[in-house]
Image (cartoon, one colour):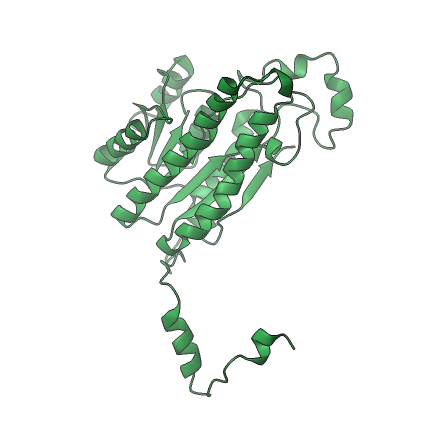
Length: 287
């Protein structure tokens, strides 16, 4: 018998032993939905922030969140919104907004999130999505290029997560944070290799597990989504390569680039109260 089992103190039938153990346990905020909870997966009433939400995956996620009844979506982006953003904003008046934010600056992140709270009175969910990539052989990367990737993809995501988590705690909100990781955090991307990019996304996925553990006591859930081949401005060239069809023969899944909106269901679930018992995981959406 293992020592931990053999040496465990006996407890009386009145349950005093369990009470003692419970009293020494840390207090955790319970994320269990109330008795009147609607078990439909929905973002009704929720204010969601999305970094890098003016285009690409971020804008597609905004669209899917709006389709799933989010109260308001805020894009926190360093770039000014373009025509696609304006079109979506017009289709959802008073529900889609833009706040300028440089995620590599803690001051900018604090200011942007505070602006959301000032306008809406709360923030319930956050997608740390802003990022960049560069595809080239490992020998060709300079230190400056690697630092740029880590500064945006890792430090930026970390600043956003810690800032919004503090606001959740201050406001008494049991919020949800979702990181955009990548399938390159699991395996190399033969179609467009980038060792430093994969390393940044591996860091994001690892960070997800630890932050989920640390913040569970506050009722804050932290998860990530790992996209596979997604059709965006950053990946336009991938399926144009002469050997694309050959590579896809051995991919083992759906041999195509995904519409970025196809990622949305995973994020909506993780942001919703339907995921009240889901934290510290990564969901691969990779065909």
